[in-house]
Amino acid sequence: MQFERNAILVALLAAGLLPLAVHDQYLLHVAIMVLFYAVLATSLNLVVGYVGEFSLGHTAFLGTGAYAAALLSTQLGWPMWATIPAAGVLAAAMGLLIGSITLRLQGPFFVIVTLSFAEVLRLVADNWVAFTNGPMGIAGVPQPAWLAQAGNLATKQFFFYLAWGVLAVSLYLAYRFVYSNAGRAAVAVRENRYVAQSIGIRPFRYAMLAFVLGAFLAGMAGGFYAHYISFVGPEVFRFAFMVSMIIMVLIGGKGTLVGPLIGALLVTFLEEYLREAKELRLSLFGLAVMAIVLFLPRGLMGFLTTRREMRTPPYALSRAPRGAAPADWRSQIRCALGRGGAILSGVSGAWRLGKPK
Image (cartoon, rainbow, N blue to C red):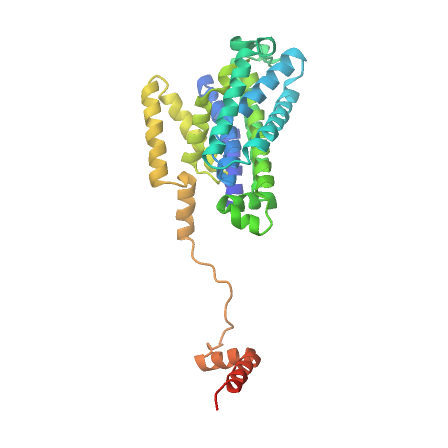
């Protein structure tokens, strides 16, 4: 708990200082995408890592948030500071609707149905021309007016800190959930659903909490993405986003808060480095996932945590008083017989009563 909290604080502090040292617009754009994907990976990790259900429909919440922010700003004139939280709320409502159906399923059925919901929403965005403008998408999603005179570098710096703020809020909410009673109950469901039920934990309730919170975070990321790109189309539901999120969670380490941050950093920079070689990029990602599953099933963060735990000396629960000699086996037996004397006497008496004459 303390280790993850300190690691998150250090990571956020280091990221917050980045625009002061980097003035290259392209590098700032890559850093913004790292923060954006970190929010998405964190949101997916709540479902995959802490509930234990493998969702392939998380782009449904990303797209819902993106379209919500775009429509609220272009049609109703809402400012950006209001559209991003509203996008999260609407995505959470969508998560409540989808989760009420999908979370009653398990295993491959859950995977297929979540993927189907994401595809249905993509088809709606692609064909409901009167509402979403169809394949043409919604262009001209507004940004703050003062950015027009601020210059490109200042615009990148502004959106960097906006993404940084969204990530900070996401990590705070995820941290509060994971280390709450609800988060511990969700982990218990992940480890063994039937044992959790036997001690009074309701799997559906706590899985729904994680699912809705993950949808809220993904919706905020979608709202940010709409304003940053200034365009939203059906492509926001594409499966490529889902693949990137899954790889980030698996490589970084599911079931940890720091793991998705590591995965987002590595995968985003690798994607940018291999942008020109698309076929090679997909092959490398496939090999990376296979290697992680085979050799590092807990991801990089899980591997580092295991190594750290192995180096930590065992903790002594109690110490004997100085000068106290350990009791010998005779005194231990006498003590045990003293505590259970009544039972032993009863057993002995019953044996004598039943002994044949």
